[in-house]
Image 1 (cartoon, rainbow, N blue to C red):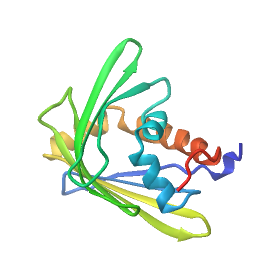
Image 2 (cartoon, helix red, strand yellow; image 1 turned 180 degrees about the vertical axis):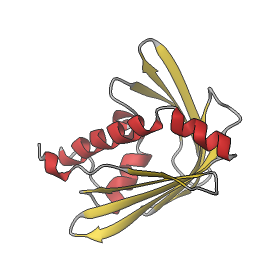
Image 3 (cartoon, one colour; image 1 turned 90 degrees about the horizontal axis):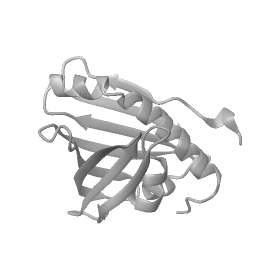
Image 4 (cartoon, rainbow, N blue to C red; image 1 turned 90 degrees about the vertical axis):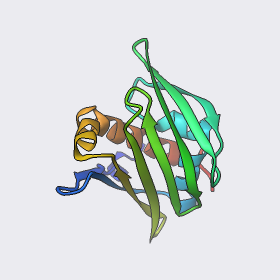
Length: 164
């Protein structure tokens, strides 16, 4: 495995708005990254921190579709759900809800920016209900899930299993 390709995700909280921004570069095309986010069999293999096992309940990756999955860790279940608003090879707009905090729905945009030479930058933004809600997400261990998940995605991409 070529570990020098792994970059860390930049996770930033906007100081005045309830927004979290995540930026991360990958050795992949925009279409490969979109597929890794939209194909449930691929997505559930990399999302979240190490030691998590996830399964799909509903997955309809199209404009107006919905998704729901359950992650298990140390005997605990964590349920997530949302709706796809826009689905393309360069942009996904969706809602995101952790069912343990059902009133905290975020609106997420994921942009896949082609950097050339087989590299793509993921620019993600999550608009939360309030600054308090955003800060609760940040305290929840979200950073570990993002960093670990993207490292798993790197390995999945490097294996050649994500074709566009």
